[in-house]
Picture 1 (cartoon, rainbow over the protein chains, first blue to last red):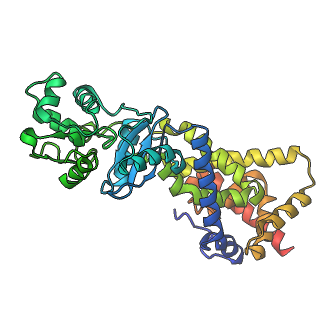
Picture 2: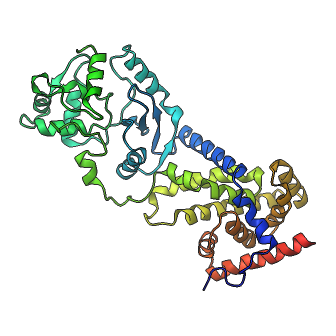
Picture 3: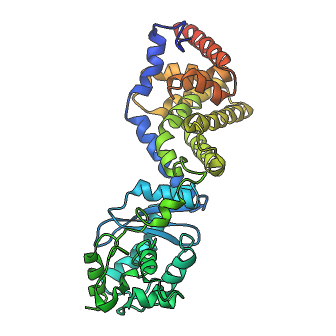
Length: 213
Length: 180
């Protein structure tokens, strides 16, 4: 039953045939180059459902992902890249390709924002990961102007759920596009900072940047 | 206090409850490409030669991308993508025959454009490319992609016994060719 029955000993020919596979180098590099050309072509021709790539921020390198409608996900540096991609694969489509160059417009807007030269993001967004109550909460949050803040209670009320401040907090905490959807502008009542993805010091940093403090 | 401390996807309550869909287990396409690009490349470069390998590689993974979301979650991804690569290699061989170039010329071009440090074995691989279709596929899948007989059979679309036989016949023919 052994799969190698009948040819137990490798002869010179089989060793020669196997040799190239065991060598590392040229084929590996050529395969990596071919794969890069493929990713670039898939991105250029719009054949994938989701593209992703790294973007810089003062918090470290973030992961951005976009559908053909726009930015669908922005993940903080400490989030596990494979975990984020697996989530997108499950919830939207497994046709996910790496396309760093396609995020240049986002990089430009983020750079301008972090340098204090931009107050609103203009790039297209895709809110398909945001459903139901969370969509209402983030919709209200999106309308909070640069330099202003609101509270969980106010946001919940504006979203049509006056007693839902805890639920509003959860909705904000799982914001798939932080920074661009400014959940950092929502504080606890009494002006207490409240939580934020990756820690409240980031929230303070962003509010400082926007001149709130 | 804890209401908004969670990071968006990892601990968001909805993302953990939504998990478990039908697509669980199918990796993002980019990860699938990263994992299998090398065995596909090795198979193609030895099956169709370095000049045409890149075209076949692109066609293989474009076809895979199109069909990818319909794949069953427990599929053997390596055997599946090599099945596609195998078909693309056959197309390339048949197209080359239709162009009616003398076989010797094609082999010579392939060897020159390889330009790699493999030259001692390059004659051997040229001989592999001269084998009949099924033998050529069996030999390249076995020695370049390191597939077991079962997956060779799957990629070619034949029984495991037939795959074993083709491999054996291919090796016999190669022994004659290299000792000639």
